[in-house]
Length: 96
Image 1 (tube, rainbow, N blue to C red):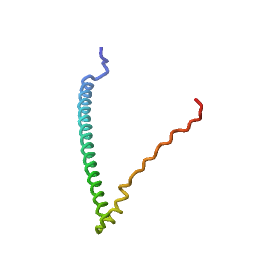
Image 2: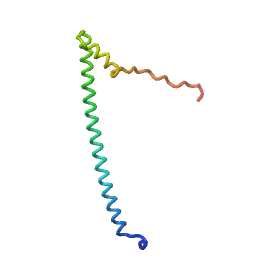
Image 3: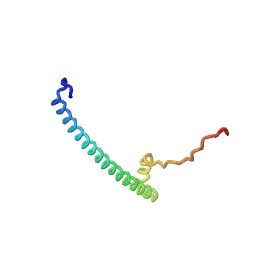
Image 4: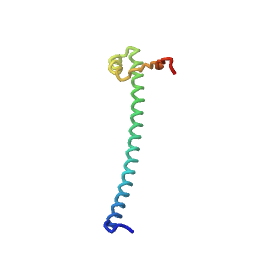
């Protein structure tokens, strides 16, 4: 009951090829996810090390050790403390 105009052997080869490609894409997606996770871990480690170095620099600058005040001033731009502001609730018109 299949259409005689369709080359079913070619259809089956295309389907097999498609399934193989889908499997490879899934493996590549998995690899990308794993590489991204590893990169994120290294980013976190580097960030923690930078925080430690900045804290040490601030400590040494506070003791007037030579050069540390300049280093702290150079690094301040990267370690800006964000100020949390209270959100203002939306104004109500009194109508419900």
